[in-house]
Amino acid sequence: MTIRHRATLSVFFFLAVITTTSADAQTSWVSAEHSDALSAAHHLGIAKPADPDRVVGHDACVKCHASEVKAWQTTPHAMTFDQLHRKPEAKQIASKLGLRSIKHSGRCVACHYTQQTDAAGQPGSDAAHHVVAGVSCESCHGAAKDWLDVHHLYGGETVTRLTESAEHRAERIAQSVRAGMRNPANVYLVAQSCLRCHTTADEELVNVGGHSAGSLDFEFVSWSQGTIRHNFVDSDGKHNATRTPEQLRVMFVAGMIAELEASLRATAVATQKATFAMTVAQRASRASKRLQSVAAKVQEPILDQILKVVAGVKLKLNNEAELTAAADQIAALGYRFAAECDGQGLANLDAFIPTARK
Image (tube, rainbow, N blue to C red; front, top):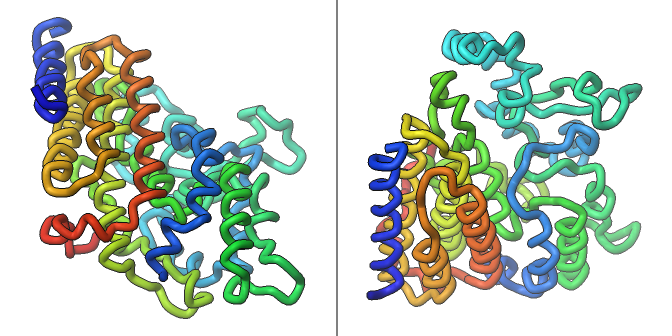
């Protein structure tokens, strides 16, 4: 039996368990900067909400990224700060869960807002945290306190982002990643950030609150390259560039891997046969099948390794340790894929990459 067949059977087994038991520009993506950053990035592990004690706020990004911030300000990510807590459906979910404030509840803030610790507050104290933005820079790229300074050191007082040497850029990115930045030089880090919130790994929030189990139609290329695209770096803020075909191929597959990782993490916390468990299981099944289809069309050994991981776990309720371990392995493989694949060998996927943008 092949790895791909075993993966399919394993996912089907899980669904049965739920029913029955509880019932150039492109080469810069894969050049030395990725090799240097590869081992450093693994310590980031899973994507997590930005630590309020280490958040500096999006105003700290404007000096170098004014065009990016301007683009962000027009997106739903930014507007959720003023809009979400006023929506009837959000109020209804909060009421069902007994939450007094959407903007002050950790389970809401974790995905919909950015928190920062008050200057006079005690670090680590929830009482010292306040919401400063919606889904902002640090929601996706990591709280910046520990990496902001090194992130904009280009190699000398007269050196700019555009004149920085390739070698210095590679080391600067590696150091930033080691300090906690989820840098888009490796697109898997960004895909993880997206799927952290576009997959709802909270059983009570779904089953009791009535929240969706995630954005089931999420697709990394179409969602990241539409309304929220802010790719101004290479033009020094002048143009919001589109990605090359090779880059889009890598993103297309990286998004699938990240969705599988996130779905397994959600499945890991499923304890009862209900909407949450069924939905996240079905999503994991779909993600696995899609990766099987991709692996059949291209020669990419890392995808076979991922499918082998999926095939080797028992997908069942109350199996957090095993499923989380599998997700951790897939996260490491996803990072490797995005670091090592230049997209040139993925041309067979072009017909399947969405052209529409969200």
